[in-house]
Image (cartoon, rainbow, N blue to C red; front, side, top):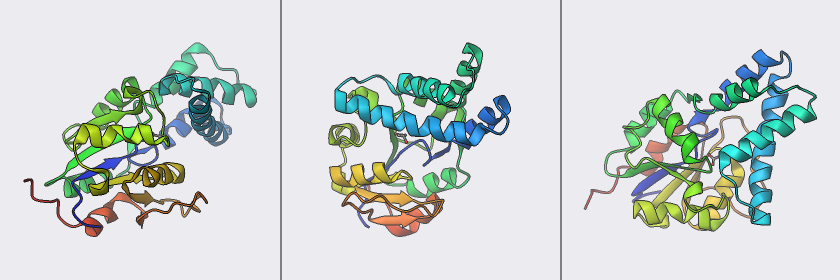
Amino acid sequence: VQNIGAVVFDAYGTLFDVHSVIVRCEAEWPGQGRSLSQLWRTKQLEYSWLRALMDRYEPFHVVTAEALAYACQALGLPLSDETRAALMEQYQHLTVYPEAPSALAALGPGRRLAIFSNGSPAMLEPLVANAGLTELLTSGWLSADEVRLYKPTPGAYALVPSRLEVPAKRTLFVSSNPWDVAGAKNFGFLVAWVNRTGAVFDQLGLTPDLVVTDLSQIPEHIGQGPLTS
Ligand code: LAC
């Protein structure tokens, strides 16, 4: 995979570990933390896809809050306003995967680095700042909210080449979420799947160009950034 002018990252689960959400859920409801955070994440994604199919877009922080409300109700967990606020706040303080900063530093020279996420600006701005990634992400973050279209709709990914001014075929999209990997491939990016957990890839008729177990393995596969013309 050569001549890559831009490397673009999914946020949740790719650059950022949502595990800190589990810890906060577990603190609130001991023994229920993992199941709550898993159901919360599953519903968050389901709702984004269902809203897209119904053409009833809402920003990702709204969808995330509605998914949390569902998950707590489904598990019979009473959710107070302050607990809701505390759990939502966790999304702004997710831990960065340990290898991410050095991987970003290695990929940076001669190319654009950015996040492209379903996350709304209200979610991404503090998340990136709190994680100290502002300098390393030379082209910042892009939110699907700018086009009010969620991944994996091609129109969502189209924001990336239009903002970065690097063609899709010279852009490497990096995600840990197979559905997002398939969506990015469908759009026309070169795609790397970060499979940290030994997961099975989804059967969607699309496969990643590169499979790694963490971000540190990406630089060796894509060589040097093209000399900035
Ligand atoms: C993101 C979520 C969906 O777009 O992983 O960052």
